[in-house]
Amino acid sequence: MSVILPPRLRPGDVVRVVAASGPVDRDRFETGLALLGDRYRLRYDDETLFACEGFLAGDDAHRLQALGEALADRQCAAIFAARGGYGLTRILDGIDQKALRARPRPIVGFSDVTAMLAVCARAGVASIHGPVIAQLGDLPPGDLEALIELLETPGPRPLLTDLERLPSRAASAAGGADVRVRGPLLGGNLEVFSRLLGTPFVPDLEGAVLFLEEVGERGYRLDRLLTHLEFAGVFDAVSAIVIGDCVNCDGLKDGVVQAPTAREVVAERLGRLPIPVLLGGAFGHGDRNRALPYGTQAELDARDGILTALEGAVS
Image (cartoon, rainbow, N blue to C red):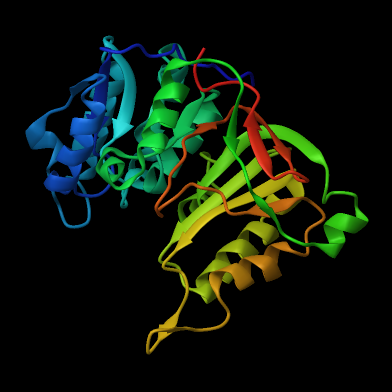
């Protein structure tokens, strides 16, 4: 299936903000709102956005309706997630993939929003793995600038540099350590992405450049998640892997990091693969979250540690 690149944004465009996952912290949201609101006209319903029902931003019907209204808004040029958390997987079966293709626009988010980005890719529409509104105030200005550039400027561009190659005898033997590989850029949060396997919502991973990040999962859980991806055939399908932040994934005892660390788990699980694996991507739940076009073609230079978008997230 060919990938549709939504129309690019212009300053002053209407951008809808939705909370389709967890409850939104008002202070953090308003900080991010001030940063993005200088460039676009942000549209949201205050009562709807700050709804709370346990660990959800309102019940399933409430969140699905808010997302549906944003998708149906003819003036809306892009849709931003207010935050991540949890909840999108519960309503994926209510999202009309044909509607996504009929009226494409960039959908921006990460973490729990991985599920929505995967559905967009499944529908053949490009989206953006990037900051949610509530995260914008925690990031350096350059990450917001990179996001705006991705929203407004079509065409190829470097995405990540200074990636660190994970040593692998298997990759070296197969000639995979120093190669350049091309494929659709897919992935996101490891925990959320893994839950899509075996469902109608996982995109086609054949030849993909798979990028993964995680937060709060200890070493044995990372091991279990990566092992699950391996047994599900994911690593046989993809052409390369890029690992971003693994925040708060190291176990601590009396303030001392316990072995194995998250990095050691990743190295042990992925270092056996005959494909390039690179670490140090500036995306995820940490101090950086560089925006990545989701579902579009990218090239990974494993020797020089550079990930490049071959096409933008917009046309």
